[in-house]
Image (cartoon, rainbow, N blue to C red; front, side, top):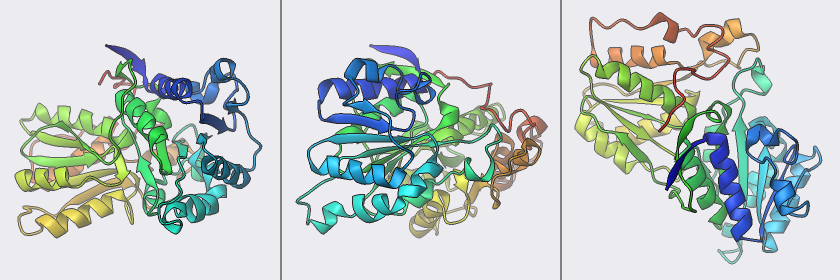
Length: 354
């Protein structure tokens, strides 16, 4: 049976499910037991499972991550949460040098079943130091698995799969997705890490995205449907391992590709996908692949500037028009350079359900 749930509720439900069925699962993070429960994703878990399994931590990210690694080596399955991805940068040595390498350095004799929840904090004037999208930075490191769901059902299934995995998993969670709704199975289930999702079939162009920007791609596909253009949509879901076979199969059919990133364009996930497609489909592409993403500047604090920096529906539409050499299609101005309000809050036109 499925019920309509918020993305944040799906995260909470997956965490509660795993705390119930596995006594070795623990949850630690700054603000975990607070009344707001990290945007509603940890609400009342301490009351249900006790302070010895669900607890707050000092503002000492590197030390806490080291403690979590030690706990994982002693049979626990820790979930550590960071309310902003930037907070995790203080523990990069533990994540990149220790957690990601441990199984390799022990020839597979030891494993580190850790989930690191990293929340992307776009909007609300948070500016250069609290609005970064650092997906590609973590996906670059062998030994880490990296997932980035775009909807509530995948969020629950991927989080359960991440907690059950014997390797360290970075779980990227876009703050703008917390209010999106979708139908979520009530039972325990897993979404396989390393498998993308062919969300919508089409024949004119392949659009690949993940996390929040996949929501915008859905709206773009609906826009072009009205103009007789059929877009094939692929949701990555997992950034490492990266499931490129469905993308290559799709591009061989459509012969056109645009990758919409949540990150800066250079050196990112989009760049990696374009490279792999070019290596496998370069001789059949009708047009050069394009990338859409954040402009190459730190995120401004002021909304008046931030509106020009983020990718938008309008910028995706413009890229498709250019790619397919279309005429007679007007880009909705309101969706191109985002209004001051829209640049700072999620797309109010799309709440789901998926």
